[in-house]
Amino acid sequence: MTMRRATAQDVPAILALTCAAYAKWIPVIGRKPKPMVADYATAVSEHFIDLFYTGATLAALIETIPASDHLLIENIAVAPEQQGKGYGRQLMGHGEKLALSLGVKEIRLYTNQLFRENVRFYLRLGYRLDREEPFSGGVVVYMKKSLC
Image 1 (cartoon, rainbow, N blue to C red):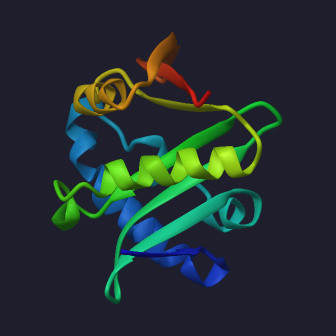
Image 2: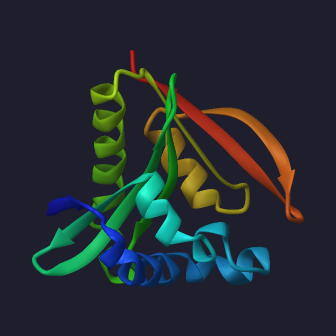
């Protein structure tokens, strides 16, 4: 895989990949997940969005937001036809390296409680439950990991 930082020209591809990756969750929660309706034109200019390619094909992406004491993973998306190849694990490793390069020792993320396979995935990677909060008729699970 090769990686590069997204630019404004990548916004349509980011939205297309994200919508494809999250479409499976619409029947689970009864609405489009937040990443499917995000403003990626703004996100590209305010966040880090790193694009991962296999050859010329956009396979996955990770969107992160730096803070003074942590790095927030806002979105991680893998194209449906690329899932199951370990790219999610690679993206999470990239996020951890990015956090350390920014001088922060904690990484945070959140996901829908009904995205159970995602919660299990993050737990296997060493993330722990921080808190749960109601959101849009569901529950958001906040997780974090110390990188010390």
